[in-house]
Length: 183
Image (cartoon, rainbow, N blue to C red; front, side):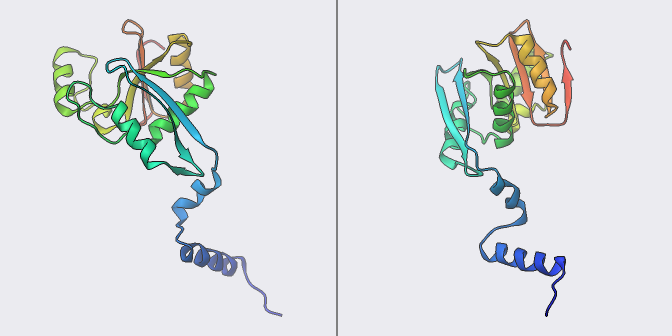
């Protein structure tokens, strides 16, 4: 009788996965087969989008392209890839506040030119904003109190959270964990 160690069995399983075109990095995504959707209303362009951006553990390229377009720099028309982790964060945030409403978008992607112009006119705009990398978004929800949205975003512990009650929005990003504004 031939006995195989766990290591031998793991090697066989890994070899099968590689032969099937899978990688270890893809393995966790395969376990998540639930569909994820997100809804936006861009306040500057008037465009709305409600899209399933992830299905069967994979991001949907056409849906991501539609998100990139709706969240483009409305001042310049520049389109930039939005990091799918930001969409995952928004989906989690939406569930946390139990809304079916669309995120009202104040600012998604910002071109370097737009960001420089805004930074020159406001201390509230970072010189090297994550908006320029498609990692940040400024939002509100019509059916959720801004303070509640802010507290829910903080509770996720998933990146930066800024609170701008005077301008009626919350900033969320997938950068390092930090927060600013009223706590």
